[in-house]
Each structure stands twice: as C-alpha cells, then as structure tokens.
Length: 276
Image (cartoon, rainbow, N blue to C red; front, side, top):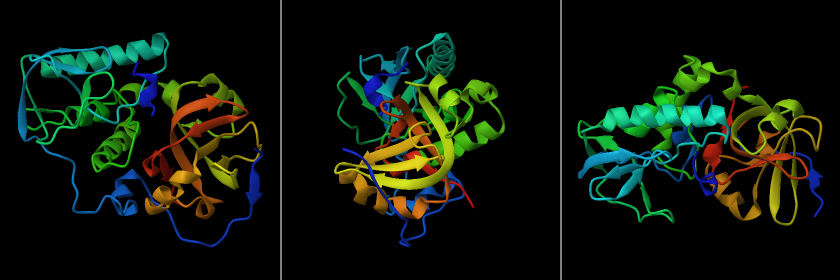
C-alpha cells in the first residue's frame, strides 16, 4: 500500500452554458489538452547514474546503496486488503527482479525528498528502460495522477493498452472501471483508489467547491469535486465543468463517502472525457 497522503453549505445548481469544447478520445491526447504542459516539454530521460539498487521496499521505493530512497511518481495505491497486499507484493517482486544487480539512472535535476525521505522521480535502468512505465505496461500498477506532468502521457497510454489486453490486475474484475450510478459497486470500494465512469448530469457549487454529478440520483451516485480555487488551473488544462454536462467521463482517485460518494481531484489529468 502507498501512504494515504499520496492519493493524493448547500450546493447551488445551475444550467449549462455554451463555453468551450473539451473532449478527448483517450489519455494519449492529454498533451493537446494541457496547454500548461507545452508540447516542447517531455518527460525527463536518464541523465545521471544514481548508483546500484540495494533493495525494493514494500511501497515500491528503490533503496540505493548510498541509502537514498527513490520512487517513480504517479503509481496508484492498492486497497488495504489481502487482494491489495497480494497485488503490491507482485509489483514489488517484479521491480526487485528487474533491478537486482542493476545500476539505476535518474534525471539530472532531482526534486527534494518528500516527508518520508523519498525522492519522486522517473526511475530508469542504465539501458534507459523506464521502470514506472514498465510496471504500468505489464498491468502491475495503475496510474494515479498527483499533478499535471508530461510523464503522465506515456503512463496513461500504457495503462490503456494493458487494460485492453487484460494484463495483470486488469484480468481481475475487482479492478474494473466502476459505473458511477451503481451505489452497490461504489460502496464496495469505499476508501480505495478507483477508476469510475458516468455521464455528467449537472454541475453544482458551494462557496468553496465545484461538484460534477455523475448519474441521475443525487446523493447516491458519484460526484467529482475540486476547489473553486483550482478552477482556473482545471480550465487551463481543458476541464471546464459546464462544458461536461451530457458527456461521459472517467475519473480516477480516492473514493470517499461523506454525505455522498465522491472523489476529490487535484489535477485535470484525473479526468478523461470519453468520445461522444
């Protein structure tokens, strides 16, 4: 399991307005939907030899021989259960096998360590193989976007292919995309990272939050929410709530139950607008 903090008044409803188009056929097109990324930006490539790997920890951190901990970003957590523990153990075993006796390469510019002393950075073998991408491509982990990042584009594309091929966890119906209108399916995954899909029925807002309601039954169907403070960042990333009404979207994040089932999102990368 990953650390929980990694997951990453009455609502007023109003009618949709004709603002802008925001649609995408799949996550492969995210580069075009994120003006903030810039097409010139690319995911960092291996530029610095970080040294040999010593071991792989249970949360998929790679401990280098000098004691530093590094971990590929955007890897989603598994549920705290026997099934989730088994999936995480499989991912760890694969990563341990791939890195045993191998030198690890990272980007030239390293971010500061997080609160747990880990450096979140794309991680490569000396031959240039992206280890986070390999985990996703083999269906060993899902993508959990924590922020807008050019490295997400190949990760999400790899996940699409793994899901289509039913590789790894995608062969297990437990990890299927959840229908946003099914209260039973949602309740069965409360407190877990999920990918859910539904049609946007209405947009609501309070003084601090914006709600994207999926499904006709308000209160029991899924709502996606983000802060009004982040509204401009979402619009800049191609996600304008009013323009989503009537469209089918997929959303990924931690499924919580408060007054209703909801997923709070922090980046436009958490939403995929399906083709109509």
